[in-house]
Amino acid sequence: MAPSLEAAGLTKRFGEFTALSGLNLKIQGTKCVGFLGPNGAGKTTTMKMFTGLISATSGTALINGVDVSRDKKAALASCSTLIETPEIYPSLTPKEALSMLCEIRGVPATERSKRIDEALGRVKMQEWEGRKVGSFSKGMKQRVNVASTLLSDPDVIILDEPSVGLDPRGMSEVRDIVRSLGNRLVFMSSHLLAEVTEVCQEVALIDHGKLIVYDSIENVTAKFAGGSGAVKIGFSRAVDIQTGTAISKLDGVTSFSRVNDRHVLVKFDPKVLSQEKLFETIAGMKAGAQTFESESGLEDAYLSLIKETL
Amino acid sequence: MARPAHPRARVSTLAHIGIITKYNFLNYFRARRFYVMLAIVALISGLFTFLVAYYQPPGLVGAGDALSFYKGGWGNFATFVVVLSTAFFGGDAISGEFQNRTGYFLVPNPIRRSAIYVGKWLAAMAASSIILAVFALIMIANGLYYYPGDFPSELLQSIAFAWVYLAAALSLMFTFSSLFKSTSVSILMGVILLLFVFNFVDLIISSVAGYEPVYSITYAAGIIPNVLTVPFPAHVTSIPAGARFELKSFNATIPEGLAILGIYFVVMAVVGLWLFQRKEFSA
Ligand SMILES: Nc1ncnc2c1ncn2[C@@H]1O[C@H](COP(=O)(O)OP(=O)(O)OP(=O)(O)O)[C@@H](O)[C@H]1O
Ligand SMILES: [Mg+2]
Image (tube, rainbow over all chains, first blue to last red; front, side, top):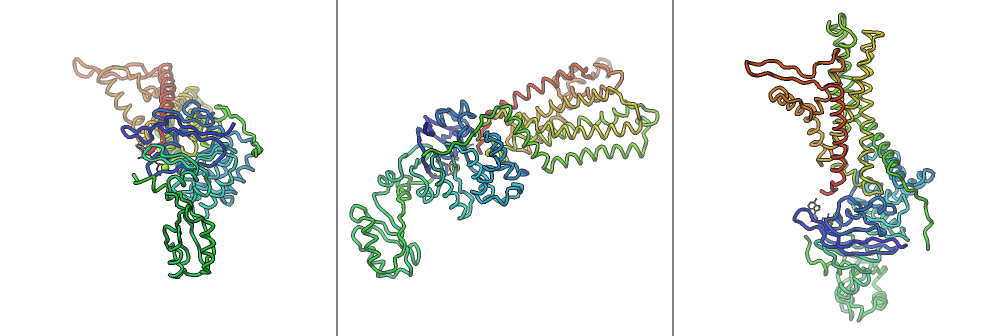
């Protein structure tokens, strides 16, 4: 059976305030789904209801078809989670803390140490496996938290801003980890649209506790990014004014902006100008164009869907 | 493409309790507070040992007997050591999972909250029992020094009662720690209640109103020192105060005391667990 996450009429009220309002969302299959929305939209609230940290006011949250509020133990049997930034008992070492989770999750004793080594290796924390967590920095702790989701070979992984607090290399490592989690269902909230574009195939976008859209990134981009394409071009030398003017005057180019000396961002209408043709033309200018990086239209789509924050 | 299947056993709730107990005990054992608590016990019993050796108070040594020696030492301090250990190991056991955010690591796993609660209680019970045992051993060593060969069976009863009180008080402390999200509030409320509020209210209820304070856990704990008094103190004593008034004071009998402690243990376990099951991990 394909792994699945399903919210049916999922609602959470804190007193008078409705943090999540009748969320209906069914995600099925092995893929990565980005969970987007402005601060306070209800992402963490949703994920907490999927993990039994809080209970729903009404509606149900199901993991692999099992209602979390009815039987959390069964629902989470094959689902690992990282919600907000958990803390580990400060006097335990990463190895001990992860052993505890292995035992709770029924990883056989003979495999535990191998799995823990592997997981700590993935987040580059092997050197620290025997030190007490209490003295770790925020990012080091978060690395152990990420490792904790990899221990028991789950079908479903719920990640709430997994790369928060990590250094640039740590963020890129988390991206690599999530990308390599193939054959699983990953549900990941994030504010980093580049990260989401890179690792996810689909996105669910919520605002003020309501689902705005759930679709593949291509469809969301095509529908809501105003149909524009965007490409970031890197040059081997500073971009001169003539080149800039030439590019912005190309038929189909809708906007041209300098990111810095050697990088420019070009938006274009794919109906008039294909991406391929644009590359050819700019390369033909002999201005030192070196790299062409397709920017996802996800940011445009996000900005057109979310008009305001809070 | 199918992923290679990794074996994963179904873990029983009983096994989960054992796992939680083991790692929480490890955490207690490594933490500073365990040693602070040991130091407090060493200080109390060291001071006692020193003062008795120095002043040789006639009520305790010399003309005294082993029983009154233990009453003056163990009997006077045992309930205090119990309350302090439950505060140290139980006062923030549950509230800490919220305030320190360790619950976010532990709770979103295939484990029942009840297993976490019971496992943590057992770990706290184990840590407190070690403290209580150390205190008892030092007191017994003192007693055997002054009264070699005189080991009253009442002392064993008193130690057993102290252990029952420990279980009941820890149950109460856990309830407080599930009631509040702040660790300092839960610890403080628990300690104030056990050290002052009950004693104060009991005094008023019994002496002024003339009722036996059967609702009170500290009243029940009176059997810990009282069993060392032979014969066991009278259940009720009345002192006339003025012409038409009398002040009453009560001593719980042993069966009564044990029953009250047992009820506290059970009721508080149920209430605390119920609170923890419903408590939300949200700011
Ligand atoms: N315990 C609580 N009491 C009252 N309101 C709460 C509580 N917890 C969350 N909220 C509210 O619920 C809303 C949703 O919060 P949530 O944490 O789910 O947002 P989010 O989408 O994760 O935001 P962010 O991107 O900032 O992490 C917010 O407006 C928040 O203020
Ligand atoms: Mg959040």
